[in-house]
Length: 360
Image (cartoon, rainbow, N blue to C red):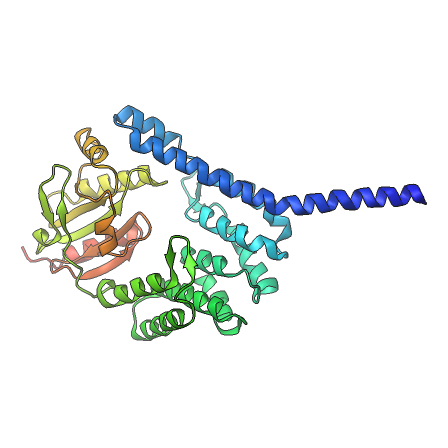
């Protein structure tokens, strides 16, 4: 009997150690990713030749690998409260990860895992005190399926600050659903609640108040149908460049950088559009956040064939409240905004539709 007791005690201790080590494992994965991306970014900034840049870009840390490690750590334990913060990290790391099959079909790599996290929140965690990072992670996905979860947290969570952050997240998702008057009113209601309840809540390197103020600015000046601000800066040669110089032309305004995860695809799509619209009243204008010498090198070697604002400090991106790259605005000849979103088919179709309205 004593021997059996010893075995039970030993097994209990092992299980306790394993349990206590799991949150530590999740934290280790996050820190490993942060260190890997920080080291890689420093190398990318120091790469001065096309060959060196190509080597550094090829070595970019693989977010998919780290996300898989995180999922192995948290996936079996989603009922437990401690998984909420690493699950929020997972959603952000997994965002935008795409798997392409042999036929060229592209699907989200972690769609099943993302849905499992959503279901676990609805089933077990709607009133958890650890939901603030998760609210913003759900919002960052821009997925309408997350809206109902955020609205349940906004209306039913016992903590007012958490309610306010959920309201901000809901407003961010509503922005992706359209621009009709009802949606705009709902966005404004949620933004007001975010400011009232959670203005001082710190989110990474910003606050709820700052993000809400940015969204209010977007509603006033950068939503579809508004006249875009007139960007003013310099190109890669230091020559003055203004958005209003393109008056009368359709403008595809691309905020991008050569070190973002999908840079190669961005360059290819943009180069293809440049060829397609050559000689037409459509201008592709980049706002590039790479160091100036890297932008010059990309242009001189022929990788980048479109004109760019040089914006290494992201000052121009801040004027357009761009928080993620790539982001595309499609403007008509009077700088009226007709599309805001990701690069791809919808942006291109919008530009082509506007081209038919341009007077010779």
